[in-house]
Image 1 (cartoon, rainbow, N blue to C red):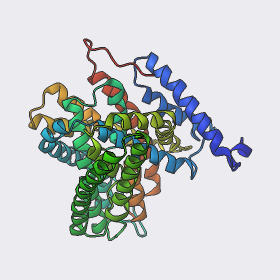
Image 2: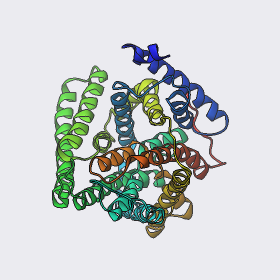
Image 3: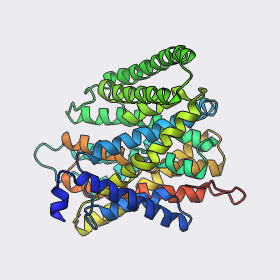
Length: 409
């Protein structure tokens, strides 16, 4: 097995194993009335280093997985009902705010009770900052899992689905602000500018650039389409270029997540005459290659983990709090904005998944002495568990016995 794993062409075998295992387990979970994405996530865990060791997260798999989530959020943006999203704009902000404050409080209280950071030495930040940082990790939301599940259930364009998408974008921004504040307080500059004022300016700058880019794209695109109506494939390529450029600009110049740039790019294309054709082409590529690699990569993050009894208990409680604080926080925000009880629960559940966002936040905190190495195992387990349970819970809360579910190819 070691020969296979070190071979320079091993990535071909890795992809083959990922595609086959995610599809087979996806079909298996569907037989138990669960979304197929659950099977894909479990496949990553089983095929990864924590179980059978058939696949590992290489320098090729990682960017391919990132491209997968970019395409997933891009198609979600194209399929979003802009009118419904505008209606839920203010509500999304309230939901996101509650979905940030409650997890911060829950993570801080658990860490304080557990004494996280009290035995810190060397260049580690103070115990208070480390405890708050655990809460900030819990604020992260990886909406890509929710998006795929809602698409599979045919619920992406519902009132609750639109609120989840809007809140997730705002949640990402609030998370960046909170991360910058705590890193500044800890004496680290990191990649976020080290100043809350600079971060806010960057965020505003990104959305200004995004709006300007969308306007220019529409002007150039419609002029081009007026002279070229023969081949829609060229249109698809140009749209993908626009998505990638906006994703790159978001990360490179404004320290905003690339998936936010991809989602905004999708929104800019939403409602255009050829959007349906474009979305179909991207869904084919995503289904065949990119999405399975992305979902499996989350499970591949699990490695051989050894923890003390105290850390195991902390991990369990951290995972429970991660789930409850999002349901309570975002659900409370939804109730304040007069969503129904059922919609409030749906929105709260849709925000549970932490995914790669929490891992990125944890890595940044580690680089600035805000988290110790022993806490990485609980965080990874929390990320994987919340990611797996989210589609299962979404299936339950969005269940409508009077509506037939869409078939999955």
